[in-house]
Image (cartoon, rainbow, N blue to C red; front, top):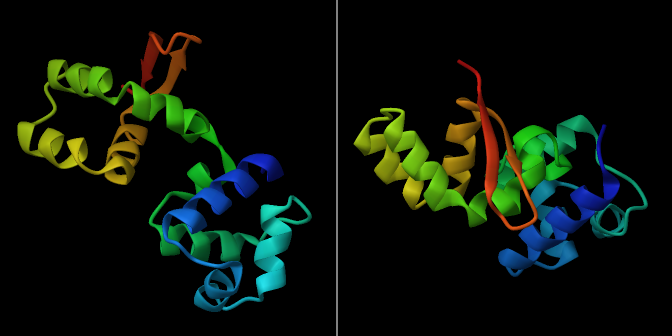
Length: 134
């Protein structure tokens, strides 16, 4: 299920990170400023096709936009990225891959989402448990 609040917050943050107005984003996505405004104010949510356009435009996974799966904890995961990188090294992930994901948060999250099923994090940002697909 799509969380309107999470989607609205993340869309606004992504739009602001690129210094775009609602009008500019709407034009880039082939929609109206009012649609962007409605999404950012939790009035409506975009269609699946539009979600894909938004994800591609900002180079983020759809799951991040809607707060699904591992991406529901995106901000917390990025805060503990060094710990996760150390764990990936311990698991034997090749150094060339580690080097690539260290400097690219989107690539990091896309990569770990294929390895890690979930991460349980407590309020002090300490990892409680990492669940792997293998």
